[in-house]
Amino acid sequence: MPRFENEGFNPAKRNRNEQADRTVPADENYYNYSPIDLNFNNKQRDDIISDNQKKSNGINPCDNFNIQNPKQPDPPQRFVSERAQDYYQQPQRQNRDMYFDTGNSAQRVDKKRDKPKKQKNKDNKHGKKPLGKLPLRKRILLIILALVIAIVGSVAVVLGRINYKEHKENEALALSSSTLESSALVKNILLLGVDARSGESGDETRSDTMMLVSLDMKHHSIKMTSFLRDTWVYVPSLGYEQRLNAACSSGGYQGVVDAIEYNFGIDIDGYAVVDFEMFKVLIDSLGGVEVDVTEAEANEVTNHPYRYDHVTLESGKYKLTGEQALAYCRIRKIDTDFVRTQRQRTVMSAILDGAKHSGPFKLYRMAFKSAPYIETDLTKGQLLRFVADAGICITGDMHQQKVPFEGTWEYANIQGNSVITINTEKNKEMLIDYIYKQSSDEINAQESSSDNG
Image (cartoon, rainbow, N blue to C red; front, side, top):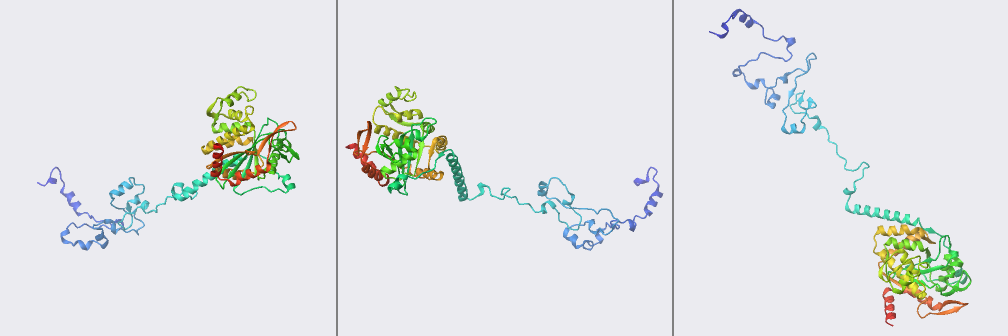
């Protein structure tokens, strides 16, 4: 018995259901549905498949949808298959239009992927390439430029701490029509160490040390020449003969320059004056200078505390502090002024040697601390050129000499004063030859022959 024939089944209801019209009214047929014929054996598949459907390899009921009907609801959306890579690139669907197409195209519309990608600006915000992206040559040039700027800035700071005086011409030379020996390859700076105390000016003191520092760029050397203070010469600021160091008390620092130029015929580019405090600061900034102290020198300093400001020395070769080196240079009772100037040149050579082997930071610290104790008639530009020339010559040999030269002087007593009289013309000739003409080999050969003799 058929299943639905049981349990109060009413055949009349089934008959009424079979007679009902199952078609959809035209005004309600939004999707243009027609009765579906499931008998595919009687139809040809190509008759019902459009060209677009052939390309899509399937039947999609949305293809025949009439999008011109304004009364219809939102059109159905065709699903576009996702790919695996799409899933990983966009795990969350923020916009349904990225995965569904409301038109006839079967291709996926990916708005985010179709949007042009912004090119990252690899330059900085000012449009300039970082240093690491520049070519090697440009990087090197920039580094060198930065170093030059730093050096120039540091030098400018040091130069600003120095005391400057107006340069004056030698009036005595103009009156006598004398000429001076000069060379573009030689620069002469007169270094004056004055025995001055606080509050004293150049006119109230005498020059304790007179040392000419010559930069010989022709022979690549530095030549130091000490002038003995008791040398009896003509002093232009006095108008008569007197000890050389009297030129400072009568004509100031420029008076010493005038006297040396007038008597020895060399052109002095300028002077630099230092006092005792600067001498100590300079040496302490270098970490001391190495000097070989004799037993007599050590006893002289140690046994006279008031004369040498309570400084003590020991005999032997060791590093002296600024105070010890100053006391060492001032020793004058145990020997002659010739030996005393020798000690001064020894300390100056040790300073130059220490500067040669010092790094730029130590040199800057030394110059920075010493600058306020320096007075000069050179301009900032002249000082800068002198320092540059010294940097060229300091790698060469350093030589020492004194005036008067050997065999050109003798002790004398004039007006009750013990002085040194000299052959002025002979010293002039020898000094010009030493500063402007002699090479390091020639000077060393002369020193060797003098030591053997």
